[in-house]
Image (tube, rainbow, N blue to C red; front, side, top):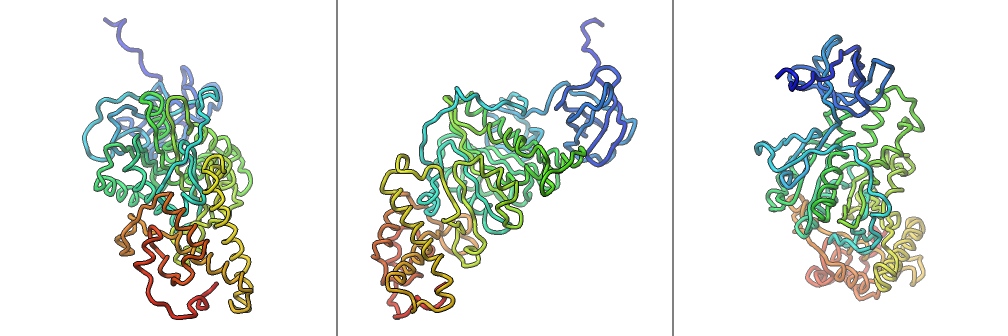
Length: 477
């Protein structure tokens, strides 16, 4: 009987505790890198091994608060890395970084657990087909079309509408999404998570959705690993269930920031602007796992906070390089009330080529950009001399551009209760038809306000009222 008893777990002793960094001494054998260690009563303090200091010491980063941890306390090696639950049983549930359900809906069933540390799919297994992913948001579908199975980033500083735009996309896409949607909240507010859960429940789309949250108040180790846990679930649905997965991440900058905190705690010398020297590798380890394979696809939409609106910040620059579409939000447009506050001249998409979107769509998008760029160049002249001093052709360009800007605004479902405007979903065909008719000057006699916050262009007729003559001169910049 004694021979069949399980061997004693590998035990160590805490040597030092400095905030989230804990050094542990092991006499027998050292646990491998990324092993999970447990300490405290019932093992509620969880550490991840990040470095082997010498033959007897490892350095771990805490994934939970370290209150109550003291020198001399016993630490038990769990014998494996951090794992995430995968299987059909995770659908409609909400999880933390350890895969514990945090929605008070009872225990999980029909799940297995897999390590969150997984390699990206090899190049030989990746799919190369390009398809457009419609969002129902005019300015995105027309000017920066998203790729089905690609990665899109929503870039912007604080308070320009990244989360609102992401939530609107969830609302528009999740209902029509045939596969599974996974929302991963990295270092964002718990209020947003609770609101999203409630909204998804009311919309009746929770059955095909999984939510994971590593919130602002959690240690950097937990915020750093929550993205890997979400990807492990996404890979299960792609590879085992052969489904298309929509992965929504809010906010990828907080992942980089958590890595920066962990790096600082481990005593690594920071590189430019205080970022960790391993930032590009850590980001690539996460982003490269988001891929299309012969089994299924993972389409990712990620919010990216841009510190101080500086797009040359290393975090923004490194993130740009992984994306197939970059949607840039502008504080100036937000202040003018043009929502979604997307800057069409800074935003770009690899999909916007004639071979993928078709010649008509490509030509229209180029003409819209050209018109808006000419208007941007003329703004200084208008500010100094007034609109009347422009040549007639330039005045027409300004009129077209201002009407295009207003037509590319859209009332959102997620902001109905604040704005009083009912949300609108607009097909790509209707959005292109509207832009084409504005460029052909069909609406030059309509007031600009008739095109503001509408869905299809036909709604302009209902809003149009008899117009006084010189309506363009007021506030023309």
